[in-house]
Length: 355
Image 1 (cartoon, rainbow, N blue to C red):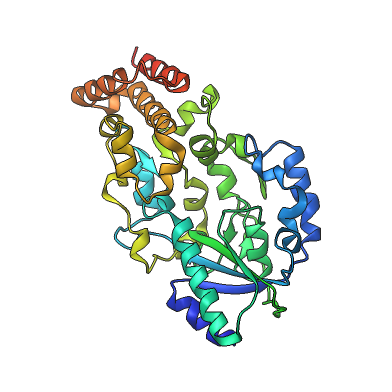
Image 2 (image 1 turned 135 degrees about the vertical axis):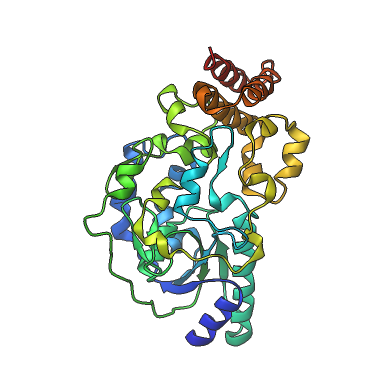
């Protein structure tokens, strides 16, 4: 059955599959310490379910095993690597979107294919109790992935795999079947500290410890208020997420392109000009981000991010042409009276950077 399951998983676009048990009790102290330190920032949902996050059989009563999957997501229609992404971060007039968000919303893709995997399993084994998750419930996804052998926990807290780096999504299928767990794998970070050293905001405060409050992904996606001044210049032209700790990791030279067209990069999100993004009103934002994970942050937060990047571009005016300076300034001026005070404040700050 296991070999058949592996074959079916690959047919559905999953790169790897594993099985974990449901006893995660030894992960509970680390979770509690991380929350107690306040490293979750405003992501209060991470604490709202208590220790259910580390107790699969409490989250879904009757769960006896967890089938885990990973799915590579580097876009197949672009040559995306550390060098090209590093160059993109130097283009002040353009915005940079995290690689995972340039294609279709992964929640939809992974969840649908996991559900299909369950259906195929039921055809072989008969009906069984189950529930599908992918970054959508209080689940210790990385912990389950590591315990089932999908990789090891890197110092940047992401799951790493020797043959695929870390550019992959995780998903889980909770089942009421007692399945034998797959073997875990050894860690291979050694003495490397590249991810800690190269994090722009020093969000990786120690090996295996991330303070989300300092993380650019958190600040541009999860954080709803004004972005703290101490991080504004450091964010540069990143407008949705950050991949720096991944590109810094030597193992990502083995990162695999996705076999699914779902994750192909969409044209509006590849090297977009900031002044063009500033011209998007809410209807255009919703249209351009339809089916994308970006849509969930809403137009106002998107504007805040783009305005911040525009301000950082104005601060480095020596890298811009006179036309680019004018376009960015006019793009910001159009939003001075935005009804959201967070956007208003960000626009004012950004315009002041050219003074």
